[in-house]
Length: 81
Length: 146
Image (cartoon, rainbow over all chains, first blue to last red):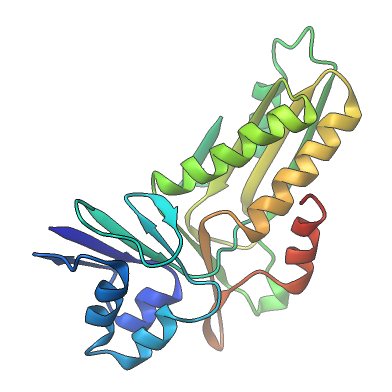
């Protein structure tokens, strides 16, 4: 089972913050396609500028494998302070 | 040390605590970021973090700053949750043998926190709410250190 977390404006667009997939898709691109299937606004936002992904709390680039991943987070542009 | 706080904190007390017992330090620089009311246009800020990930990401940058500037120590406090105008959002203190390193490291850490640290900031006001993303100035400030 893989837990998917949305942060910032992504969770506002989706209307949810956390969801589980069991069995999870094997790759990040497949997970994004699955999430975006029923929500085109979210699909567009996930592909928006500056949106990063983290797998098990490590930033990733490109279409990584999700085999064995417990948690995938989608992170819009960050701003603190 | 890095701490995320979900309640208001006293930056003066944080600075006093950080300065205590430093017979060999020589220089401490600090910065406090305070939520602005924008003349009634911002009634509250809401800050979201990714617990575990946020501290780890800030920790990597802070440890790199320790090496780069020759810091002896640092303290970063960052609020999460709902923040009222006038409350401190962020506190950074840096300790080094001489002042230049302490000033520069503090400036560097704040530029990083404003534009690249994993926080998401929503501003609430009379007209509704909006997500605040780094400004061009924030990004340019952070790029000074690359």
